Length: 264
Image 1 (tube, one colour):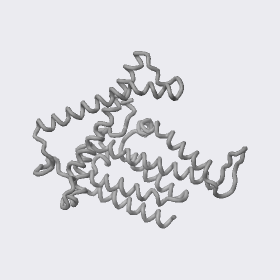
Image 2 (cartoon, rainbow, N blue to C red; image 1 turned 90 degrees about the vertical axis):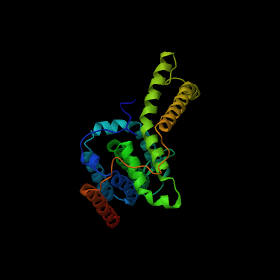
Image 3 (cartoon, rainbow, N blue to C red; image 1 turned 30 degrees about the vertical axis):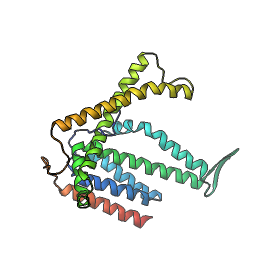
Image 4 (cartoon, rainbow, N blue to C red; image 1 turned 90 degrees about the horizontal axis):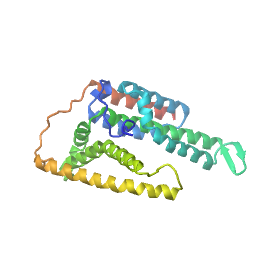
């Protein structure tokens, strides 16, 4: 499970995306999430596909590794696809079998919405795969710095997000270990009715929550022992530098936005 987990996991390779400023990456993700909803035809979705594939290529992360990590989310994408096919009654009727009716608008909407969801998953996954938790913390804190003037705890919020991302793979690893221990004791998670499977999950959740709270307490103790008192008066060992590659990324996304608006 740990080998296939990509959310919150950092892959240390040499690539243009790894060298980008974390603030540029965060801005790119935020803008892309808004821009992806501008696509409404084959040509605009083709542009999004080119941008997404280019980002994966520049990250130097194997496509097979990326797709294996997102494999468990493909079922959600398929569910969204079939949901639109069976319940969107727009356009010409393409197929009818009993009470099942598939319309042209439903098929088109299902494909487009599924692609939109798929592109969002791929691009947002690249953020944690190419950026360390420390860099994400510094980037969020820098972008939200103006909110400090109104008393918003920017540093604390950034630290919480960073810790959450950091512990996602750790908790998945703990889940895998607990599942193997329970299976060695005769628990079967794959067979039986839904009610029986739900009961089998209970012995998994209780030790998982206990370990999570234990890790949180240990982390808090370690931070206090090292003199952590919040963001007030803290200095930075690593300074963020906005470079040419960051300007190119923002400019490319700006051009993509203009093209999507013109081709709608």
